[in-house]
Length: 96
Image (cartoon, rainbow, N blue to C red; front, side, top):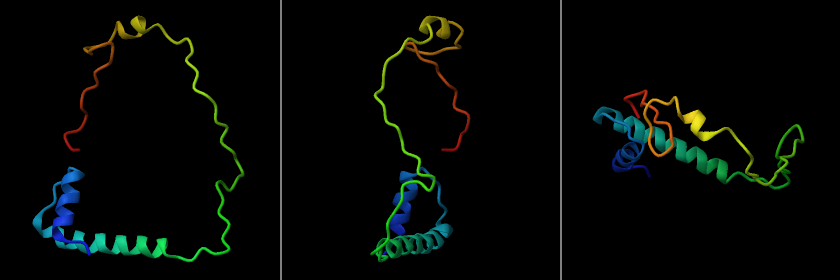
């Protein structure tokens, strides 16, 4: 069962502001979502042969290889600010 405290904790972890009048509805919605996930998890899948991709595409894995790249100093010389050889990007939104 989903409780009021669960919703408050989830909202805090997700850095969401939740009003007191929203908590009851969110508790109900979360309980329905979890119930639906439980239904899917318990569905019988006997005889079902899953597939990875409908187009039969296979992922060709390869080793990561360090290659010659752009000159770091040339790229970083026109940056505005930055520390330790990195770009600093300004925060674009006040909401997280």
